[in-house]
Image (cartoon, rainbow, N blue to C red):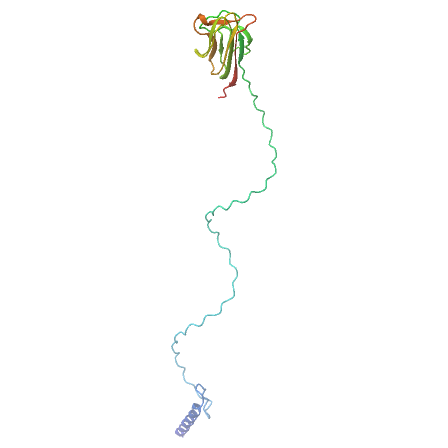
Length: 244
């Protein structure tokens, strides 16, 4: 009896399998008709092996723009650039405020040295300084009437002049500076006439230099003369003092 039931069941399954093959692949097999509710499934099999990785997918679409990032660190100072073109001159500014009044300066000192003298006697000795003892001006006392010499106390440029009355003899006089004759004047006497001889010169003097007049040569040229109406004079004064 059991054998008969098994044969019938097998035939029913074969018949059902034929019906299923007419349907598309992948269709689920229905439970066999007439199967009992106590049908028991078999034990599950072991999991299969992992398949090989699939190919990379296509690139996605670009995303939205992100937010602005923080500022980076300050970089090193660059090289100095070339000088630009000079701009146009600007308008003239307003006058500034006047400065403070300066301190009073030292007063300018006036250097003075001058003399003017005349001859009081008609007797003169050759080759020695002529002593002019008639004083017209000698406020600084730079002229010495006892020696007939001018003594330089202020270095600078001086002017000297002399005017000699000539009478009875020829005259030859010299202006001396430091024992050296620097200027000569000669006048030839005209019989029974009073004549004049003169000379002038600029000299630079140092402190201690001396200047004087004297008859040059022998007594034959000693016609220097003076009386109450005729004068023989000697004059000198400072023009410019040395600044250094």
